[in-house]
Length: 85
Length: 233
Ligand SMILES: [Zn+2]
Image (cartoon, rainbow over all chains, first blue to last red; front, side):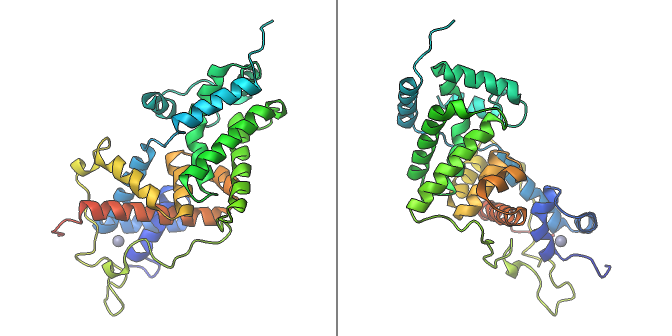
Protein backbone atom coordinates (compact mmCIF):
# COMPACT_ATOMS: atom_id res chain seq x y z
CA UNK A 1 0.00 0.00 0.00
CA UNK A 2 1.43 3.36 -0.94
CA UNK A 3 1.49 6.21 1.53
CA UNK A 4 -1.36 8.04 -0.15
CA UNK A 5 -3.67 5.02 -0.26
CA UNK A 6 -7.16 5.66 1.11
CA UNK A 7 -8.74 3.74 3.97
CA UNK A 8 -12.22 2.24 3.79
CA UNK A 9 -13.36 4.86 6.27
CA UNK A 10 -12.22 7.58 3.88
CA UNK A 11 -13.66 5.88 0.82
CA UNK A 12 -17.25 5.90 2.11
CA UNK A 13 -17.06 9.68 2.47
CA UNK A 14 -16.04 10.02 -1.19
CA UNK A 15 -18.48 7.64 -2.86
CA UNK A 16 -21.22 10.22 -3.46
CA UNK A 17 -18.84 12.63 -5.21
CA UNK A 18 -17.19 9.72 -6.99
CA UNK A 19 -20.51 8.67 -8.53
CA UNK A 20 -21.24 12.26 -9.56
CA UNK A 21 -17.82 12.62 -11.17
CA UNK A 22 -16.99 15.33 -8.65
CA UNK A 23 -13.56 14.10 -7.55
CA UNK A 24 -10.28 15.42 -8.91
CA UNK A 25 -8.42 13.02 -11.16
CA UNK A 26 -5.88 11.91 -8.59
CA UNK A 27 -8.44 11.17 -5.88
CA UNK A 28 -10.69 9.36 -8.35
CA UNK A 29 -7.74 7.15 -9.29
CA UNK A 30 -7.01 6.39 -5.64
CA UNK A 31 -10.67 5.40 -5.18
CA UNK A 32 -10.49 3.15 -8.26
CA UNK A 33 -7.36 1.46 -6.95
CA UNK A 34 -8.93 0.85 -3.57
CA UNK A 35 -12.19 -0.49 -5.01
CA UNK A 36 -10.34 -2.99 -7.17
CA UNK A 37 -8.87 -4.59 -4.06
CA UNK A 38 -11.60 -4.16 -1.44
CA UNK A 39 -14.82 -6.23 -1.63
CA UNK A 40 -16.33 -4.32 1.30
CA UNK A 41 -16.03 -0.92 -0.36
CA UNK A 42 -17.03 -2.37 -3.69
CA UNK A 43 -20.24 -3.65 -2.06
CA UNK A 44 -20.75 -0.23 -0.46
CA UNK A 45 -20.42 1.49 -3.83
CA UNK A 46 -22.84 -0.94 -5.40
CA UNK A 47 -25.36 -0.41 -2.61
CA UNK A 48 -25.08 3.33 -3.12
CA UNK A 49 -25.70 2.88 -6.85
CA UNK A 50 -28.76 0.79 -6.04
CA UNK A 51 -30.00 3.40 -3.60
CA UNK A 52 -29.74 6.09 -6.30
CA UNK A 53 -31.50 3.86 -8.79
CA UNK A 54 -34.41 3.34 -6.42
CA UNK A 55 -34.51 7.08 -5.70
CA UNK A 56 -34.78 7.74 -9.41
CA UNK A 57 -37.81 5.48 -9.58
CA UNK A 58 -39.71 7.21 -6.76
CA UNK A 59 -42.94 8.81 -7.90
CA UNK A 60 -43.03 12.18 -6.23
CA UNK A 61 -46.25 13.30 -4.60
CA UNK A 62 -48.47 15.65 -6.53
CA UNK A 63 -50.96 18.27 -5.36
CA UNK A 64 -54.12 17.05 -3.70
CA UNK A 65 -57.14 16.84 -5.95
CA UNK A 66 -58.90 19.64 -4.11
CA UNK A 67 -55.96 22.02 -4.54
CA UNK A 68 -55.72 21.12 -8.21
CA UNK A 69 -59.45 21.66 -8.76
CA UNK A 70 -59.20 24.98 -6.95
CA UNK A 71 -56.37 26.02 -9.24
CA UNK A 72 -58.29 25.10 -12.38
CA UNK A 73 -61.25 27.17 -11.14
CA UNK A 74 -58.92 30.09 -10.41
CA UNK A 75 -57.39 29.75 -13.88
CA UNK A 76 -60.84 29.96 -15.52
CA UNK A 77 -61.40 33.09 -13.48
CA UNK A 78 -58.08 34.80 -14.19
CA UNK A 79 -57.77 33.62 -17.81
CA UNK A 80 -61.22 33.20 -19.32
CA UNK A 81 -61.13 31.55 -22.75
CA UNK A 82 -60.38 34.08 -25.47
CA UNK A 83 -62.40 33.90 -28.69
CA UNK A 84 -60.23 32.63 -31.50
CA UNK A 85 -59.32 34.79 -34.46
CA UNK B 1 -55.05 10.28 -12.19
CA UNK B 2 -52.12 8.66 -10.46
CA UNK B 3 -51.27 6.74 -13.56
CA UNK B 4 -51.33 9.89 -15.61
CA UNK B 5 -48.99 11.73 -13.28
CA UNK B 6 -46.59 8.84 -13.44
CA UNK B 7 -46.56 8.88 -17.17
CA UNK B 8 -45.87 12.58 -17.14
CA UNK B 9 -42.96 12.13 -14.84
CA UNK B 10 -41.36 8.95 -16.04
CA UNK B 11 -42.84 8.25 -19.41
CA UNK B 12 -42.44 9.98 -22.70
CA UNK B 13 -41.94 13.69 -22.33
CA UNK B 14 -44.96 15.87 -23.00
CA UNK B 15 -44.01 18.38 -25.68
CA UNK B 16 -43.04 21.63 -24.06
CA UNK B 17 -43.23 20.14 -20.59
CA UNK B 18 -40.34 17.76 -20.53
CA UNK B 19 -37.87 18.43 -17.76
CA UNK B 20 -34.53 19.60 -19.02
CA UNK B 21 -33.64 21.48 -22.10
CA UNK B 22 -35.57 19.57 -24.75
CA UNK B 23 -38.55 21.90 -24.74
CA UNK B 24 -36.83 25.01 -26.01
CA UNK B 25 -37.91 28.62 -26.10
CA UNK B 26 -40.31 28.19 -29.01
CA UNK B 27 -42.28 25.46 -27.29
CA UNK B 28 -42.39 27.49 -24.07
CA UNK B 29 -43.71 30.57 -25.84
CA UNK B 30 -46.32 28.49 -27.65
CA UNK B 31 -47.45 27.03 -24.34
CA UNK B 32 -47.62 30.47 -22.74
CA UNK B 33 -49.69 31.57 -25.71
CA UNK B 34 -52.18 28.78 -24.99
CA UNK B 35 -52.32 29.76 -21.34
CA UNK B 36 -52.87 33.42 -22.22
CA UNK B 37 -55.75 32.32 -24.45
CA UNK B 38 -57.35 30.57 -21.49
CA UNK B 39 -56.58 26.98 -22.53
CA UNK B 40 -57.49 25.09 -19.38
CA UNK B 41 -56.15 21.77 -20.67
CA UNK B 42 -52.72 23.31 -21.13
CA UNK B 43 -52.89 24.65 -17.61
CA UNK B 44 -53.96 21.30 -16.15
CA UNK B 45 -51.04 19.62 -17.92
CA UNK B 46 -48.42 22.02 -16.74
CA UNK B 47 -49.77 21.89 -13.18
CA UNK B 48 -49.60 18.09 -13.19
CA UNK B 49 -46.10 18.10 -14.65
CA UNK B 50 -44.39 20.73 -12.50
CA UNK B 51 -46.17 20.56 -9.15
CA UNK B 52 -44.24 17.57 -7.69
CA UNK B 53 -40.97 19.39 -8.27
CA UNK B 54 -42.46 22.61 -6.90
CA UNK B 55 -43.59 20.76 -3.78
CA UNK B 56 -40.03 19.56 -3.21
CA UNK B 57 -38.74 23.11 -3.51
CA UNK B 58 -41.47 24.58 -1.31
CA UNK B 59 -40.91 21.95 1.34
CA UNK B 60 -37.34 23.21 1.62
CA UNK B 61 -38.55 26.55 2.97
CA UNK B 62 -41.57 25.73 5.11
CA UNK B 63 -42.19 23.41 8.01
CA UNK B 64 -44.66 20.88 6.68
CA UNK B 65 -46.37 19.34 3.69
CA UNK B 66 -49.57 21.37 4.08
CA UNK B 67 -47.67 24.67 4.00
CA UNK B 68 -45.75 23.45 0.97
CA UNK B 69 -49.02 22.76 -0.82
CA UNK B 70 -50.16 26.31 0.01
CA UNK B 71 -46.91 27.69 -1.39
CA UNK B 72 -47.31 25.80 -4.65
CA UNK B 73 -50.90 26.95 -4.95
CA UNK B 74 -49.89 30.57 -4.42
CA UNK B 75 -47.04 30.20 -6.89
CA UNK B 76 -49.43 28.93 -9.57
CA UNK B 77 -51.77 31.85 -8.97
CA UNK B 78 -48.76 34.14 -9.39
CA UNK B 79 -47.89 32.36 -12.63
CA UNK B 80 -51.46 32.77 -13.94
CA UNK B 81 -51.55 36.46 -13.16
CA UNK B 82 -48.01 37.16 -14.31
CA UNK B 83 -47.98 35.33 -17.64
CA UNK B 84 -47.56 38.56 -19.60
CA UNK B 85 -44.23 39.05 -17.86
CA UNK B 86 -42.76 35.83 -19.26
CA UNK B 87 -40.44 36.77 -22.09
CA UNK B 88 -38.76 33.46 -22.79
CA UNK B 89 -35.37 34.57 -21.52
CA UNK B 90 -35.25 31.57 -19.23
CA UNK B 91 -37.19 28.37 -19.75
CA UNK B 92 -40.77 28.39 -18.55
CA UNK B 93 -39.87 25.74 -16.01
CA UNK B 94 -37.04 27.81 -14.57
CA UNK B 95 -39.36 30.82 -14.39
CA UNK B 96 -42.05 28.84 -12.56
CA UNK B 97 -39.49 27.34 -10.16
CA UNK B 98 -38.08 30.79 -9.34
CA UNK B 99 -41.58 32.03 -8.51
CA UNK B 100 -42.06 28.97 -6.29
CA UNK B 101 -38.78 29.65 -4.53
CA UNK B 102 -39.73 33.29 -3.90
CA UNK B 103 -43.15 32.42 -2.52
CA UNK B 104 -41.61 29.67 -0.38
CA UNK B 105 -38.99 31.97 1.02
CA UNK B 106 -41.60 34.57 1.94
CA UNK B 107 -43.80 31.97 3.59
CA UNK B 108 -40.81 30.55 5.45
CA UNK B 109 -40.00 33.99 6.84
CA UNK B 110 -43.58 34.38 8.05
CA UNK B 111 -43.44 30.98 9.70
CA UNK B 112 -40.11 32.03 11.21
CA UNK B 113 -38.93 28.63 10.13
CA UNK B 114 -36.55 29.61 7.40
CA UNK B 115 -33.97 26.88 7.17
CA UNK B 116 -30.40 27.99 7.65
CA UNK B 117 -29.46 27.06 4.12
CA UNK B 118 -26.20 28.94 4.33
CA UNK B 119 -24.90 26.80 7.16
CA UNK B 120 -23.05 23.66 6.35
CA UNK B 121 -24.94 20.65 7.63
CA UNK B 122 -22.13 19.01 9.50
CA UNK B 123 -23.48 16.80 12.22
CA UNK B 124 -20.02 15.33 12.71
CA UNK B 125 -21.20 11.84 11.87
CA UNK B 126 -19.57 9.84 9.13
CA UNK B 127 -21.41 8.06 6.35
CA UNK B 128 -21.03 4.80 8.27
CA UNK B 129 -20.94 3.93 11.99
CA UNK B 130 -17.24 4.28 13.00
CA UNK B 131 -17.49 1.04 14.98
CA UNK B 132 -17.51 -0.81 11.65
CA UNK B 133 -13.91 0.26 10.99
CA UNK B 134 -10.70 -0.93 12.63
CA UNK B 135 -9.33 1.44 15.21
CA UNK B 136 -5.89 2.91 15.85
CA UNK B 137 -3.34 0.30 16.83
CA UNK B 138 -4.65 -2.07 14.17
CA UNK B 139 -2.28 -2.32 11.20
CA UNK B 140 -5.38 -1.94 9.00
CA UNK B 141 -6.67 1.09 10.86
CA UNK B 142 -9.59 2.62 8.95
CA UNK B 143 -10.38 -0.63 7.16
CA UNK B 144 -13.64 -2.53 7.60
CA UNK B 145 -13.78 -4.93 10.52
CA UNK B 146 -14.77 -8.47 9.69
CA UNK B 147 -18.38 -8.04 10.75
CA UNK B 148 -18.54 -4.39 9.68
CA UNK B 149 -17.93 -4.80 5.97
CA UNK B 150 -20.97 -4.35 3.71
CA UNK B 151 -22.27 -7.48 2.02
CA UNK B 152 -23.77 -7.21 -1.46
CA UNK B 153 -27.57 -7.09 -1.54
CA UNK B 154 -29.28 -9.96 -3.26
CA UNK B 155 -31.25 -9.36 -6.45
CA UNK B 156 -34.52 -10.21 -4.68
CA UNK B 157 -33.85 -7.50 -2.14
CA UNK B 158 -33.41 -5.04 -4.95
CA UNK B 159 -36.58 -5.73 -6.88
CA UNK B 160 -37.27 -2.23 -8.10
CA UNK B 161 -41.02 -2.28 -8.23
CA UNK B 162 -41.56 -3.70 -4.82
CA UNK B 163 -40.43 -2.89 -1.40
CA UNK B 164 -37.27 -0.91 -2.07
CA UNK B 165 -39.15 1.96 -3.64
CA UNK B 166 -41.73 2.05 -0.89
CA UNK B 167 -39.00 2.04 1.75
CA UNK B 168 -36.93 4.73 0.11
CA UNK B 169 -39.99 6.92 -0.30
CA UNK B 170 -40.66 6.66 3.40
CA UNK B 171 -37.03 7.08 4.46
CA UNK B 172 -36.64 10.10 2.19
CA UNK B 173 -39.53 11.73 3.98
CA UNK B 174 -37.80 11.14 7.31
CA UNK B 175 -34.48 12.74 6.35
CA UNK B 176 -33.49 16.05 7.96
CA UNK B 177 -35.14 18.89 6.02
CA UNK B 178 -32.18 20.14 4.05
CA UNK B 179 -30.86 16.71 3.17
CA UNK B 180 -34.30 15.62 2.02
CA UNK B 181 -34.73 18.68 -0.17
CA UNK B 182 -31.37 18.33 -1.89
CA UNK B 183 -31.71 14.57 -2.41
CA UNK B 184 -35.25 14.97 -3.76
CA UNK B 185 -34.25 17.70 -6.21
CA UNK B 186 -31.06 15.97 -7.39
CA UNK B 187 -31.87 12.26 -7.29
CA UNK B 188 -35.66 12.11 -7.66
CA UNK B 189 -36.30 15.13 -9.89
CA UNK B 190 -32.94 15.00 -11.65
CA UNK B 191 -32.12 18.69 -11.44
CA UNK B 192 -28.53 19.71 -12.10
CA UNK B 193 -26.20 20.95 -9.38
CA UNK B 194 -26.25 24.52 -10.72
CA UNK B 195 -30.00 24.70 -10.68
CA UNK B 196 -30.30 23.23 -7.18
CA UNK B 197 -27.72 25.68 -5.84
CA UNK B 198 -29.45 28.62 -7.46
CA UNK B 199 -32.93 27.68 -6.27
CA UNK B 200 -31.85 27.02 -2.70
CA UNK B 201 -29.21 29.72 -2.55
CA UNK B 202 -26.43 27.40 -1.43
CA UNK B 203 -22.84 26.86 -2.53
CA UNK B 204 -21.87 23.79 -4.60
CA UNK B 205 -19.77 22.61 -1.65
CA UNK B 206 -22.72 22.77 0.71
CA UNK B 207 -24.93 21.03 -1.85
CA UNK B 208 -22.43 18.17 -2.14
CA UNK B 209 -22.25 17.71 1.62
CA UNK B 210 -26.04 17.63 1.99
CA UNK B 211 -26.39 15.22 -0.91
CA UNK B 212 -23.64 12.97 0.43
CA UNK B 213 -25.16 12.85 3.92
CA UNK B 214 -28.68 12.25 2.69
CA UNK B 215 -27.65 9.48 0.31
CA UNK B 216 -25.43 7.84 2.93
CA UNK B 217 -28.32 7.84 5.38
CA UNK B 218 -30.71 6.27 2.89
CA UNK B 219 -28.21 3.54 2.02
CA UNK B 220 -27.73 2.86 5.71
CA UNK B 221 -31.48 2.61 6.32
CA UNK B 222 -31.85 0.15 3.46
CA UNK B 223 -28.93 -1.86 4.77
CA UNK B 224 -30.46 -1.92 8.26
CA UNK B 225 -33.70 -3.13 6.77
CA UNK B 226 -32.17 -5.86 4.63
CA UNK B 227 -29.77 -6.96 7.35
CA UNK B 228 -26.06 -7.16 6.81
CA UNK B 229 -25.95 -10.89 6.27
CA UNK B 230 -24.57 -13.30 8.82
CA UNK B 231 -21.45 -14.47 7.07
CA UNK B 232 -18.68 -12.46 5.56
CA UNK B 233 -15.69 -14.29 4.07
ZN1 LIG C 1 -12.24 -0.56 1.49
